[in-house]
Structure formats: structure tokens, C-alpha cells
Image (cartoon, rainbow, N blue to C red; front, side, top):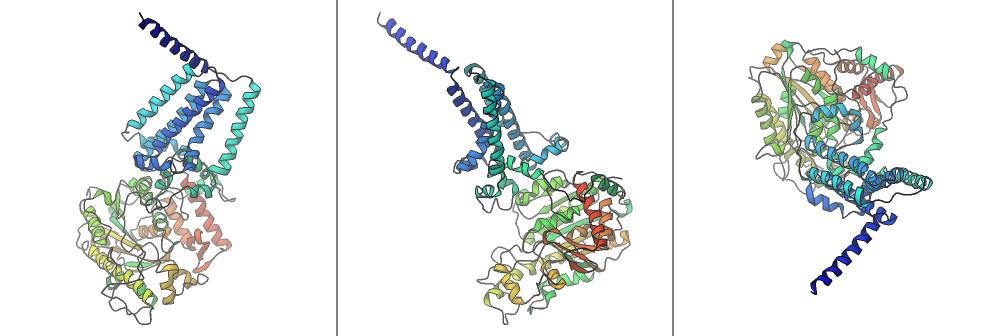
Length: 620
């Protein structure tokens, strides 16, 4: 008998609580708080997507930076409140902004799966190209996707049934919406695009310093994505005319490679590889460069005049692969000579003796057109040393599909700085003479190697061994080997300064010395016979963007139209270095071109700009 009153008492309390909760459905403050919490939840799910491939540790790391949290959670919050005051409906305010944020986050997640590259604002200018790439992949519908779908459905249902308050008065709603919009604009200008803030929330470390992707992910998703909007405003030269550039490019139709001239090509870009003996300032106790000099005698050889010193490998690398004069954005399918070779029936691949994340090569090399690109992660027992590098490049060549001509582009890692100044090991390849201990150690370590890898002496010997292995190949093969930049020897290049090498950038000799890197183009007998060229002689010096065109010329290939135009420019201006504000016109380094040189430069520069807006398209 006593149970019934107690039960009635409990149910009465529950009914009162339910009535209070139902009353909150129409309470303006409760609706705003609930929408805010829903917005935070959406922002956190977006951050989960942002931590793709790096998982819980980096997601938790976001919480150690209040600024990263704030800048990632604010966009969904502000968008939800903006739509709430515009529409007057809580479910609309939640559903549509959340759908937008979570869709962008999922697209970022899938793009990272496919290309190991983040979603940036400029991707939407190439939505059809991206769509065609995505259609060829099977996408991983993992727990994050299901969580996002569940959050969207449950949040919308909750908003429909539990958030009934409709803000009154169009005037008040308009003022609130305008205030949110104005605040958002100010935050975009003074927070989201501020480079100092962007750098301040970035925890620099060895894994993120050399990767745009990892740098992006370290900041979440919504924040770096919104920051990337600022990159859309690429300023074109005031003299650029798109229609004129189009007509210029069309006036140079692509030329097919003759079937009987399709030889195999192997390219080797060697890290920090230079010939120090050319400067005449060192007394060598070992003929370190003897193998190189033997190869040069049976090759076309010369010097590149790079844009970079002591680092910046990708500048030399990507200008070589594209023929561009300016390093640009490679976050989408981009015109390159690799695409051209694909169109000519070549199988294009390569190997980098480093991680796939380094300089975002995994995604960017795919955008540049490589059919397959390998990294250390792809091979058991791999090593950054040249012993592994050269053997792997040769192995890939020998195991290729022989039904197609072959193009291989490979990047070494051995000889990467720094080079210790505190001690060096035997043998000593240079005489100490009057050199300070620090300079002697640095130079010898560059040549002999250190505790990590062997040095230049080893690289030079292995280059000769690699080419020797191809001499008797019955199939024609051409090898192009070149350095990417001068090594930085010592803090502030102290060793190079002590050696007394002329690095006065105001002089032609000093500029060439500072930015020099050797190249050689060698062909086996089968290739010489096929191409009717002995491949011996002085190849001259020029910027990296001209190197592929010179290789094509030796192969009797005209190449694509843009390359043909570059050859015309090279006859007048053969060094173009935008980062350094230098040109070389008719053999003289200068800051300002003559009227003839400027006209030749602008012609090709206009074609380059237009070509960049036309991914992987070749006119014929």
C-alpha cells in the first residue's frame, strides 16, 4: 500500500522535470547554449578528420594549444549562429552549416587518403580534375565518417524536437546576423590570415619542417583551410594577357617523339653534389673526383646555375621537371614534362632515398604525372645511403616493363648536410695545410662522410659503377646526372669563406660559383647509334628549367611546345633566377634585361602562367 504513493511521488517529480525541460525548448538562452555546444561538437569532429593519418596523439595535442582550438572551433560556431539569426530556425542553423563543415572535413580526409595532401581552397578551382582522380580510388569509409553522419543526423533531430525558440523581430535578427558577419570578416583579416599568428601556433620539428602537409595537419583543419583562401589571390604581372598567352602557346604545337628515337632515360639528382676541385683552392691527397672527370670526358657536361644554395632541393627538382622559371603551387595536377612523356607512351617512375612525406613528394609527384614513385617505406631494409640508392635505381630499370620506353627520375639523400666541424675520420682526402681545424674537418667530412653515411668520394665512385653497369645494355639508355645545389659548408659558410672561393654575387664569377652544380649527360652505345649522336662535348651552363630541354635536344626530340619556346629564350637569356632577382643575358649576369631580353622573357613567362592554369593538357 505504501509503494503506490512513493511511485506517484517519483513520477510526479519526473513529470515536473520533464515539464521544465520541455519549457527550455522555448527558452532563448537554453537554445543558444545548446546550439553552441552542438557547434563545438561539430568542430571537434572536424578536428578528428584533421588529424588523419596521425591519429589520437595529434588530436590530443590540439588541446595543448588554446589558439589552435579556438581558431578551429570558431568557424562552425559562427556559421551556426549566423544561419540561426538569418533563418530563425534552430534545426536549419545546425543542419546546413554542419553539413558544410563536415563535408569539407571528409573531403580533406579522403584527399589525404588518396594523395597524402590536405584540402586547400584552390582545389575548388579544379574540381573536375580532382573528381576524375577520386573516381579511380576506393575510399575508406571508416569510423570517422560514420561518426560524422551520426552526429549530423542526431544533431538535426535534436534541433528539430528540442530547440523550438524562434528569435523575434527581423530587425534584431538582422543586427545580430550583421554583427556576426562583420566580426567574421575582421577575424579573417586579423586572425586567420595573419602570418605571425599562423607561425606562432606551429610547433616546428624535424617531421613538420619539410612538409607542407604535416605543417597543415599540425594546425587542425578549419584553421589552415581558411588560411589557404588567402593564397587564391595570385597576382599576375600587369603586362599579362591571357588570350595573348593562349595564342602564343598554341603557336608552338607539341611535337611527338619519333618511334625510332624513343630511348630509355634515367635521371639522377644527387644531393649537394659539386666538384670542389674546379675551384683550385684545395690540395687533394686523394683524387676524389677522378671517376667524375672520366665520365665527363665521355659525356656532354656543364654547369647548372641554380636558384638555391645549401638547401632548397625542390627548387632545382621541380623547375627541371616542369621547365618553369618560378617555383609554384603543386597541390593539383600540374603541367610537366612527365605528363608529356606519359602521353608519348613512356612509363614514368622514380625513387627518392627519403620518406614519402618529405617535401610532400608523395602527392606532388603524382600531380606532376609520375605513374609510380617509390620511397624508403616501399622497400624492406632500405637506406638513405648511396649504396642502396644506386642499386635500387638499377634494379627498377632492369625490372621495368620492356614493352614501353622508360623514364626514371631519382633523388639521392647521401651528402645532405650538416658536416661536422668538431672532428673527422680517416682517410683524409685533402691536405690540412693552413686550414683551421674546423674547416679541414668540414671539408673532409663532406668528401669522406661521417657517422651517418659515406661522402662525395663514395657517391662519385658509385656513379661510375652505375654507368658502367649500363654500358653493355643492348637497349638504348641515356643517363642524366646533376647536383641540386652547392653544399653549405660550416656555419654561415665559414669553411667556404676560409677557402677563399670568390662568392662575390656582384660579379659574374662569384654568382656562378655560389649557385653552381655540375651535370653530365651520358649515353650507351645503343643510344648513340639510335640517336646518331656521340654525346660528347661542352653542354654549357644555364638555369635548371632549361636542362630537360637540352637533354631532349641531344636525343633529337623537339618536345612539347612550351619547351620549344624555352629554347628560343635560352638563346638570349639562359639564367632566370626570380628568387635572386638575376638574369644572364648574352653571357652577363644582370638585374635588368635589355628590351630584347625582356621581350623574350615575357613571352615565355606569359606562356608559363597560362600553362599553369591548364593542368596536364598538351596542344597538338
